[in-house]
Image (tube, rainbow, N blue to C red; front, side):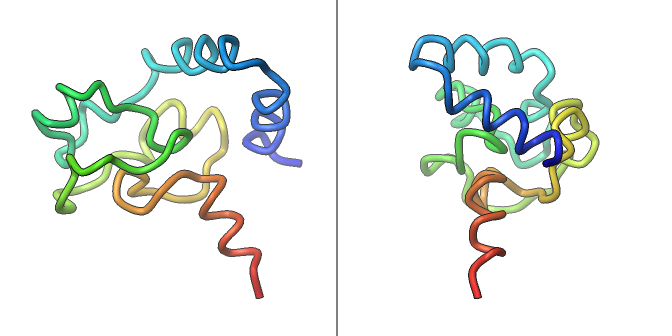
Length: 100
């Protein structure tokens, strides 16, 4: 089990409030606001941590570059993908890759 799988196992066992706290603890490490694809709409919506919570809800419409691989959260959780704001979270993408 890698670091992401270990994190998600613990995360899934938390209640709703504790999950929100866990995500809030990771927010300061999130580099989404530094990304060229991040825009005024995403900032206004408070969107962050796409790698864990999922793609943008309509704010991100084009890929202007990706800084995911340089993000502390990406490194800390040993994530495998990038462009989460456009393509979805790590868990969903790993699941999709596991399908025949």
